[in-house]
Length: 296
Image (cartoon, rainbow, N blue to C red):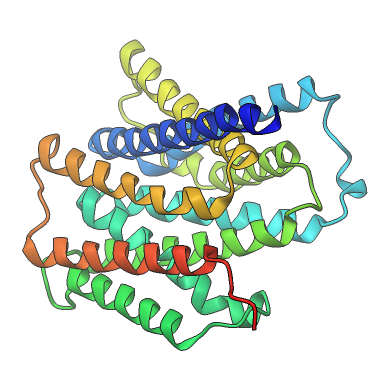
C-alpha cells in the first residue's frame, strides 16, 4: 500500500516542479517585456508585495506568524532573505540590458558555485571529478560572456552577482533544513525581500503609471512568482532534491525559447555551446551526488 501511495505522490511532486519552472520562466519573460515600460525597482516591489501577501495567507492557515524571537535560526533566516532579495534585484535589473537566454544561463551557474563553496561553508568534500565539472561549467559561462564581446558589462556583472547570491541562498537553505518549517522560511524570506525592494522603489516610480490592464498584468506576475515558490515547496516535500535538480535546466530551455520567439534574440552558436557545458556540468554533479556509494 505504501508503494502504491508513494508513486502518485512522486508523480505529483514532479508535476509541481515542472509547473513551477513554467511559472518562473514565464515570470522572467514577462519581466523582460515590462522592463521596457516600467522601472525594475517598481516591478520588484510589486512582485514581492504579492509574494508577501501569499505568505500572510500561508501563515494564517497554519496558526499565525511565529515570533521572530522564538526562531532557532534567526540569523540564517535573515541572511537567506537578504540573499534572495539580492538575486531578485540583480536579476531583474540585468534583464534591462541582457538577452533572456544568456542571462538565465549565467544564473544557472549557481549550482556549480554551491559545489565550489561547499568545502568551506558546508564542510563537504569535493573530489577531482567534481572540480573538473565546475571548471567545465565556468568555461561554458565564458563562452556565453566572452569578455570583450557583445554582452553588456553591467548586465553581465549583475547576473554574476545574482548567481553567487542564489548559490548562498541554496547553501543557507541546506543549513535550515529540519530547523525551520518550510512555510516559515517562505514567509520570512518574502518579508525580508519586500523590505529590501521597498527601499529603492520610491526613487523609481513609473511615469506614467500603469493603466488598468498593466496593473492586472503586473499583479499577475507577482502572483505567478509566489505560486511558483509554493509549487517548489510542494515538489520538494514529495520528491528528493537529487531527482528534481536536473529538471531545473528545463527552465533554461524555456528561456531560450522565449528569447528566440518572443524577443527575437536567439543565442549564437558559441552561447549555445556554453549553455550545453553548463547543463552537462550541472547534471553530472547532481547525478554523481545522488549515486549510491559502493561499500568499501
